[in-house]
Length: 160
Image (cartoon, rainbow, N blue to C red; front, side):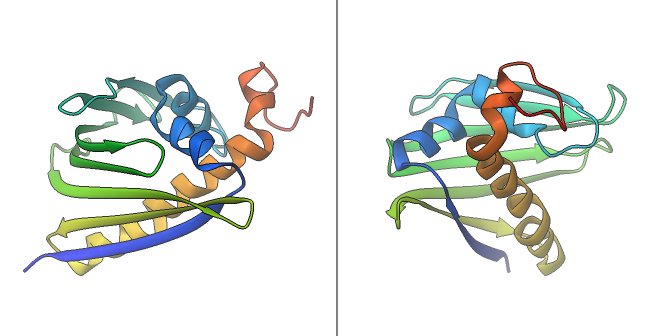
């Protein structure tokens, strides 16, 4: 038996802008560390085409890195993105899931919905639902409300 999750958040930007922020390596690098107390390592490479890979390596230091490789299965810009995702933690434990992300116009923003399938336990699914995806949604939203200041070189706590 496997477990699935569905999570959604309205992001304050158009579907085109949210899709691009989610799939452009430089933008992902910007939002990835936005809400961290101290920036960590975030190496992102994205080959946005069916069959292409999205490879992310991140962590607080070089000795404790997480890695995720996503293979693009469906790209319907700016409405939908489907990937097969394989991630590993610093111990080497890995997990493969299917991730289906949709971007729908909603009240002047974008309803971003993630359906992720294939979790081996309820606990792992719940961690992704409450921590991983909520953290990503928080950072993507922050990219649009404060991220451009960070991209232009401001540091946390500064405004531009």
